[in-house]
Length: 310
Image (cartoon, rainbow, N blue to C red):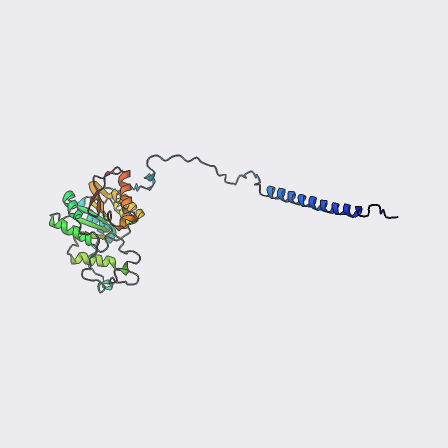
């Protein structure tokens, strides 16, 4: 068969055209196929729930009634009130198995590490203490945050001087200090991880001849205040001077108010110190605002009286 030589390049051009067209069509088909495959692969399959499958339903949130802070209130119901004259023995019975912690004090393993008197505090001698003790004439004082007992010893001396011989002061503190506190108190002993703060506190009370007026309550503020409430132990004066961050101060205030007798006074330190930046003042102001109370100040201390919180 003879080759058609009238158009010598026609055959080659057709072959080239067919090759390019096929390549374009193949590329387009590949792209479309890949797109469709990806689309259907990512679509969720509708599978009807089996009887054992948990079906989650969206529940419309309802607006809480009252103040948003209600969720953070302490609503523990306190026990039947213990008469003031029975509070000391009640605490001794509940915490120390009926025997004063000052009996046979100090224990042999700790005595050699204690100083006869090592008293240190912050704002422990402000005028607020005498002002409130004269005003309230308390039978029971609860101090939340005691450290080495400076303010407790000062208050005990004031009550004696003012003729309030029966006043009892309960000092709530875990007596562990805070991480790094020995950087500032290098003279405090450390025995097998125990900083001996409780024993030094008690030694200070013994040296001040105030063992009949001051009792330690050596537990965290939250657990101790909760138990005092449950036991029916109440106070005429409650001082808040433990943790200085907002959450700690807020929790202590809301627990402490549960053990405050009608007509009692709640007060605390660090309203006008560097610690207020960490939240003391915010916690106090928020508590007062929510409960429609007025915050008074006395030196570095805040004072809230006429407290009536349900």
